[in-house]
Image 1 (cartoon, rainbow, N blue to C red):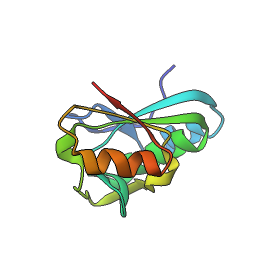
Image 2 (tube, rainbow, N blue to C red; image 1 turned 180 degrees about the horizontal axis):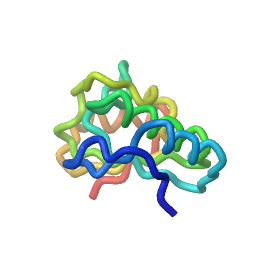
Image 3 (cartoon, helix red, strand yellow; image 1 turned 90 degrees about the vertical axis):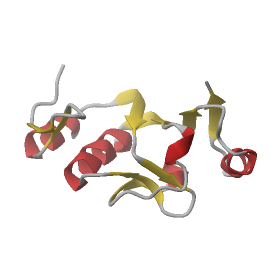
Image 4 (cartoon, rainbow, N blue to C red; image 1 turned 120 degrees about the horizontal axis):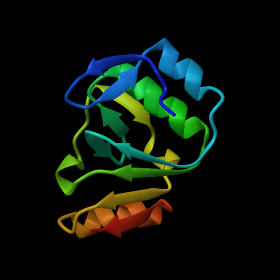
Length: 116
């Protein structure tokens, strides 16, 4: 299945817009994997475009488990469009360059961290 919508950003292959949001309203998922451009412990999970953020938020609202995939360089970075607070994610997949302090803070918030 594909959501439909507008291919707004060719470099991300993201479909956005009202058609995508309408489709996602009635779709329930066990797991959602989100690629993001920023992860900040205080400001949350972010991306570059607000329409892409709205589609990501619609997906995670109907998901049992939210898994964010972000390399360690994206930590501490805040992009313009908020997807969700850090508390909304269950698992974070990142690389082994994640600072130990950040790793420990994520674990303290109940977020599973997978270093790959």
